Amino acid sequence: MFSRVSHRTLVAAVALSLGLVFAPGAGAEGKVVVTNGIQMDHGAGATLCTLGPVGTDNAGRLVGITAAHCYGGDDVYFPGERDLGPIGRYAYVSPEQAYHDYAVIEFDPGKVTLSSDGPELRIDRVLDGGLPPVGANVCKDGRTTGKTCGLVGANEGGLVTSFAVNMPGDSGGPLVLARNGGTATEWAGIVTRVSLTIPPFVYTSARNILDDVAARGSDAPGAGFTPVDT
Image (cartoon, rainbow, N blue to C red):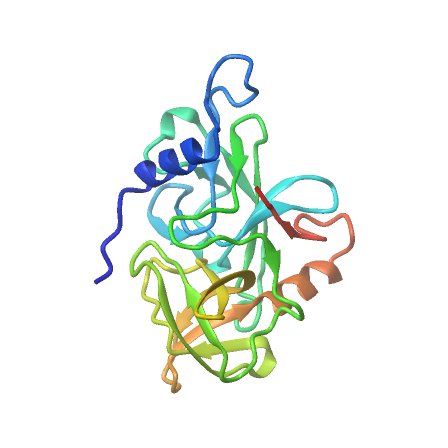
């Protein structure tokens, strides 16, 4: 049910579909395509999590968002491509993870090209208000369980509980709204944990993340986050 094609194959397919030919003079030689929903190789490689949305901030930095509890060292590597060296680093890791379980990764523009199109989801904007309402259908993507969808049961304090299944390894993966018979492209949050509540699958909302980033100042890594639209 949750079968996944290899991430390198998916990334290569995305690159080809977008015309990102890594040829001399094309401005992308030696770069990897980084999208939402891919596995990230963190630090010593002991922590396996999923990348959330990717985009730019107020300073024009290339950034991505994942779960704070995924942090396993400052450096971030592309899975299966450690010979490239780090493609980014953790620029901020939230110390408060009950309601703000997020981290900001800053990518090296000399090594990375960002894309809106992940293995299962496209993200090119933020959900208006950043908080899916109770009763809404949402979908998430993660390296362990892939794309799963379910209704929102609660959203108190900006924590979203849903029947959209997540498991260890999915942490940090993106959550989007699903409507009109399909999956929307509006980012709504990231995978956080499983709890004893009903529904049991917990997500940190985009609202909580963006409000917390903004409170750290307009020049903070991730401030003014805008998902890439390519």
